[in-house]
Amino acid sequence: MDNQLTTKSLFSQEKVKAKFQEMLGKRATAFITSVLQIVAANKLLSKADPMSVYQAAAVAATLDLPLNNNLGFAYIIPYGTKGTDDQGRDTTIYVAQFQMGYKGFIQLAQRSGQVRKLYATEIYEGQVISANPLTGYEFDFAKKTSDAVVGYAARLELLNGFESILYMTTDELKKHGARFSQTYRK
Image 1 (tube, rainbow, N blue to C red):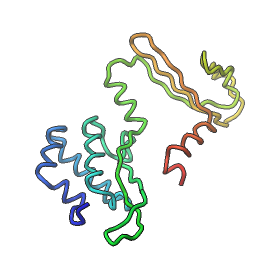
Image 2: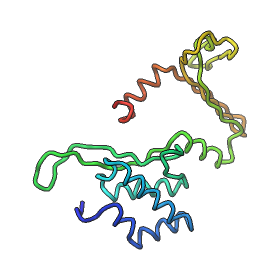
Image 3: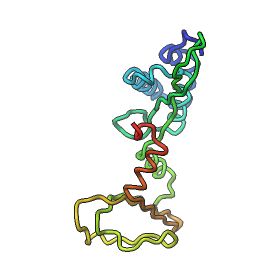
Image 4: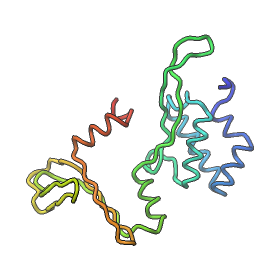
């Protein structure tokens, strides 16, 4: 990595601006500004390889998802890996990666024009009536016995009639987070 290249200097290059202009039209300048603000506000992301920030931002631009941590559509996340610096010393090298938020998945589903209904909700203690991994889960929302959330369910129905329900217990979600989310582990 060229030590002189920063994310700000990379995104100031005309060819980079032109690429985002091609993807986003007149929204390109605002998008680039949001990327630079996100990088400036995150100490680890500011240490990330500028090209990896560019690549993550390009994925968000291609999907036309805003990069604003407050909105929850998409994120640029810095991941640290062990490496060596120019002097051969052990160090942490940061690489930025695109991460879609749940609102981004909803946005893309809506844009597909194939979704009839999409819901998600908490499942409270007492509401799980039956659990069959082959035929699905049955819930009775009137049978809530406490305010303890025991899981979350999502339901998708497409225009062609396909439907699917996903249910995960809070324990399953915690295991998933511990396995796949660096932020959750911390």
